Image (cartoon, rainbow, N blue to C red):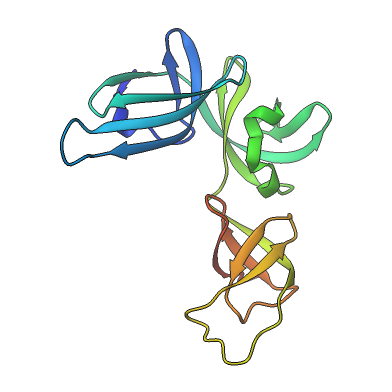
Length: 188
């Protein structure tokens, strides 16, 4: 199925020159003069090679037929990352290359979207928000205003997050998985 280049998003799978690629990043550029273009960083699924491509925003790109389903993360071992389909209990194993930097956000029982092509996981999409616990952070400095300043904190998954001054160690917070930014204090 052909789509125009400006509609490509992270996690989409495209077919270019008879090879499948998963999109890691897609940006549209509209210069003042000239043709608008879409800059795409993608990884070839067969061997993991990263490629950068630039298309006019109106160019047609072939999107590969990929089955996208919700899977539950089970565990990680020497073979890779194991996921289970909640309705059929069918398990699949994703390679470390497919999971990539998303591994720090994976939590037991977390629901994720996996793109599957020929029974092999080729792309992983995390939930937009994840709840983590703050392990350590700087103490509150008197006189700091809550609206303007943030302080660094270390989450239980090892990710550094900038949090408001009122957040202390042991507090559970909601974090955006896209850019590791603080969203809110967890309600649980």
